Length: 179
Image: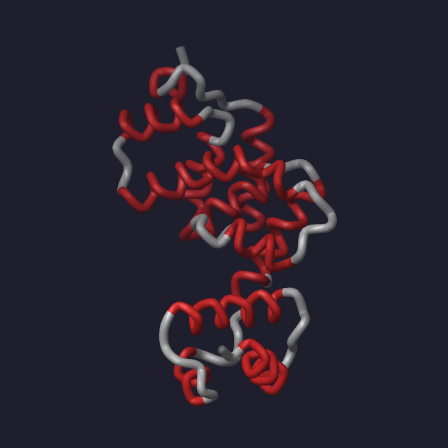
């Protein structure tokens, strides 16, 4: 029995894994490679097998979260196989996952549309923020509270979807949304 199977019977070192490790080396930063390799090693496992693996190996909490996020996201990836998704829909679908989990899924995923959406989030969408913040919205006359948070989210979605591109356009949209 090989070393991987001694850790978990479902772990396999095979051609798929070798290719994905090569892809990780080409796309990853040296400091993140061990965690990325771990995510890819566990990628073929189901959620219960991932939980068993984490329990058996007891890695640091941060690595455990990344591996579990990778597995959780893998199950939800079919939702990204839709060419009509707006950038804001992609962002709000993926923003809860650890960036390294998204990167592992980019490497492991073979479906072009899903991979394209993952790459868009990883390389661009996660960095998009509205120009206006809560303080600036309050100066425009929007009171603190849940409505302010809702307006910030609307501004963020509009920025992600290209509906607003300047601070002035954000201010005009915020004024229209003002209670």
